[in-house]
Image (cartoon, rainbow, N blue to C red; front, side, top):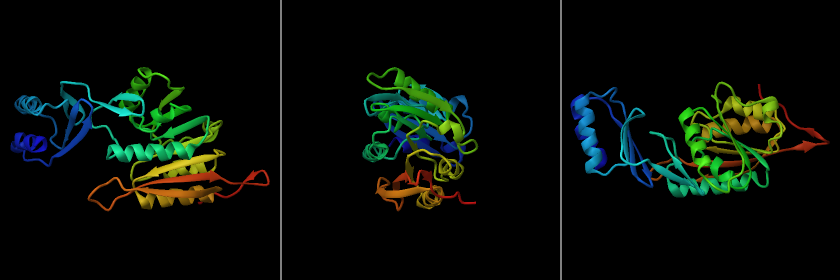
Length: 265
């Protein structure tokens, strides 16, 4: 009903419309895409929709139009105030399942780096048991993560970093002392990041992916660099579709005191 009401309100623009709806603890959080800038009459009508449908917030291309309540999502023991249009896992059960698998995958690592961390889906849960370095391209997502971390209790250390990992992957000395890496890239995967990880001495890597093809490509790079793919777990969280999420466990193999393998050209 909310989506229909928004579409009807903006019908006069005659433009393609994407409506991103996030279920938060405070109600639905809606971000509209495709309309371009909205004039005051459209804004006013959307405010009426927000009131009539008791929406927590409604935004246009990430620009907040009205926030009646701050949308919050729970990640482990932490409440996260999410930015408009935030990327989250598709379902609550899917997210909880993936998080459990990630935590199992890093094992007893005392220092974990979470790459493409978003608003802290895995990082905040990992921070309950270990020290975390959280790296993400989206600045507002990192700010939301740290705001959540600052308001939480009983969490261990969290080091945030805003960085475009597609163009500037973590590499070399930046990975020293890290006992496990978690990476959950967009559908295009993390080819350059996989190449720098393949050259590293990080003992344990947990890869999460929503694209089987790019996961296979990145896994091949890691394996050529001396990592053994121990296990791949599919998580079917995309209902009514053929898509599947994957979690893979990689362990660095050591032969006669040396890291084995070569990096694919």
